[in-house]
Image (cartoon, rainbow, N blue to C red; front, side, top):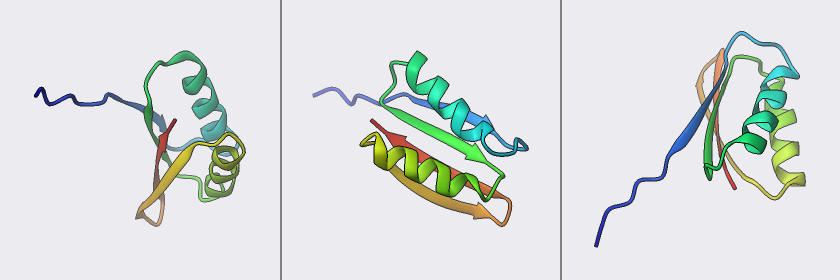
Length: 77
């Protein structure tokens, strides 16, 4: 059996204020065929926006707080 690795699209929104992280995620979801995305954000307010968007659109979202100023969101379709 082959070991198939799933590609993860990385969206780097570090240093960009809200709503840019969410807009970048939306753009990536529309244009990419990937099933998983890693959104990197430095804006703490992005947490609420991204979580709400994922809930509304039935996307799975796992949050990792890397530091006080870095948040990673792993979004799966």
